[in-house]
Every structure is written in structure tokens, then in C-alpha cells.
Image 1: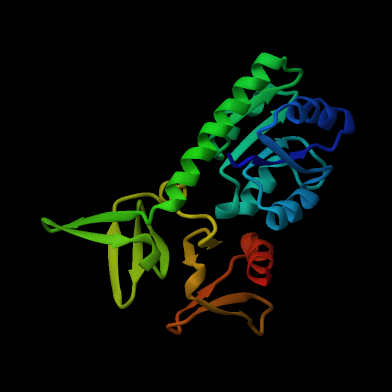
Image 2 (image 1 turned 180 degrees about the vertical axis):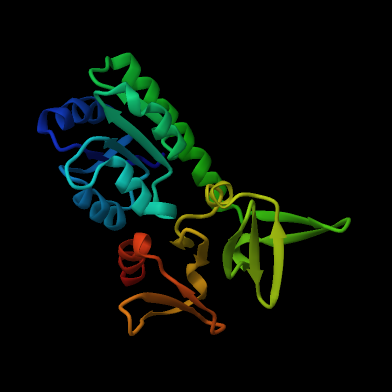
Length: 238
């Protein structure tokens, strides 16, 4: 059985140790590395591509929420926030965290979080193996769109527009909801309102004003927002 590739992120060495000790006891865990800052975590996640990340909330310069926001669709299948403060719980779950470990935690609470993470990762792996199909309903007609056929996705109020070849389909789903179903290895968020299929990207272009655009193979030019610029450059360069 494939081991769970795991990363531990905390700016305090003792806090990292408290996570590493129980993780090393589990033969199903492959510890990739430990990180002491948000920027270090971003680099490690893009390089190592872990399944599971234990992520501290409060870190200088770049905290856990900043890390998750900058990762966008590149976020690992399971993120467990770890903090000494209970006031971040609602925000953590809204940001997409699987669980919220409050320091100090006991072995039983840690084991529950780890088991939940393993279940999530197993489900994510199953979803990646299947080429998911979306059902788009319009005027009494149902159109089946394979996710792998999508060129790019555009937010449109409370819906999304799926650009597939020369056709456009409106799907009654939110962008964040659909993003959770996409294969994170095949799709990349480049703007608050735009997700692209990496198989359709031809070039990353630098404009005269210092802003980046993603050029697709069909000639479509899509802007990269400042928020996602670092993630886009790292992903496309790799």
C-alpha cells in the first residue's frame, strides 16, 4: 500500500517535534521534510507534492492561511491546521482545511486527525484515477463534459463557464465548489475568476507593465493576478 507523503510546517522546533514523533511511529507515513516558515513550505509543497500537510496557523511573514491561499488548486488533498488558538477554527474550515488540531493535543486526538486525512487522501486518489464527467443542463437538455476536455474555466456570478474547444457551457456551480473536484495536477488557478487546464497552456508571457498572461494553445490570452503570480511561475517552470 502506498505510504502517505507528509510534510510538517511550524516555525517552532518543539511544535514540529510533537508532530514528527507520532508520525514516525506510523509505517503508513512517509515523512518528506519539516519546514520552519510559510515560504519554505510553499517551495517544499511545489517540489515534493505531499499528500498531507500539518500546517501551523501563526507564523511570521507568511502564515498558514497565506500558504493555503497562494497554493490555490495546488493545495494537497489533506491539510490539517495546527495552532494553540481556537479562534481560527471557522476560518480554517472555510479555507478548506480537513481538520484543526488545537495545541496541546493528546495521542487519541492526533490519531483521529490522521485517520481522517488518510480517508480523504484515498478518496482523492480514486477521483484522480477516473476521468470525471460534468453534467451541464440547459433548456431541457443535458450535455456531458469530460473534465480533461476543458480548456479553461471562468467564474460568472454564482455560476462558472466551461470553455471547451469552441463551445462554452454554463454550469450552475460556484468556482470554489468546482475547484475542489478538479485534478490538482492538471488544473491551475491563475486568477480569482480563472482556472486553466495545464495541458492547454502554450506560454507564460510578460507584458510591458510587468504583469503576466497565460497563452493557451488556441491563442486565448488570460491574465495572471498578482495573488497567484508566484504560484503560476513556480508551477509552469516545474
